Length: 244
Image 1 (cartoon, rainbow, N blue to C red):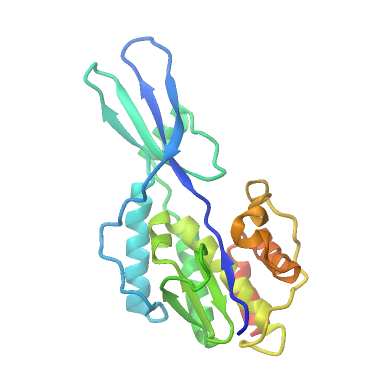
Image 2 (image 1 turned 30 degrees about the vertical axis):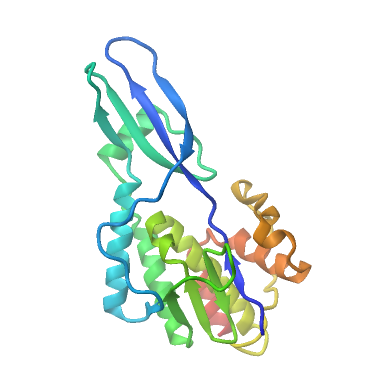
């Protein structure tokens, strides 16, 4: 059986910033682990392909609802002050009060990421890749590319991480698809593409995670290449079109 290549999503937390009444100093609390809130709309059934327009629209709608859950909110306190609550992704620095208020007033639209998701799904469908929202076979993976089945599986809970994280995961796996295509075709074992492999700071230790720590060095190098380039959201489409 050909190996599966997966992307690991790191954890998140909830941060609180209390704005007391009067001139008292601001207080912050160390982020604590948070349960992922379910998105408003019901999730698609497991193994649901995302290649058709109706499925894409449902996915994008669910991602938009998830994004709203990640937007900071102000909660009034009994003493007349406010508590600001927001969820912080792994690797993100704490927000100051000015940044929190700016996000509440003007939440990000993630239009660039939404376009990237739509373009990636279209490019993958065109070359014969089936994209499923289903539990990956590899334990602990948020997503995986299965060359033998020509199937990309994304953990359904990734949707609740929001548009930005979903786009990165999908782009990561598209890079793996291109790695396969560069080696005799879509169903082949992936090969390195020769892309830059310098990991960004927030991913500097990702290959030390249990899912990768004991993997063969060849697999670790393939993952390094995908992680190093997953934030370049237009790259996955370009690579799939060039190699597949």
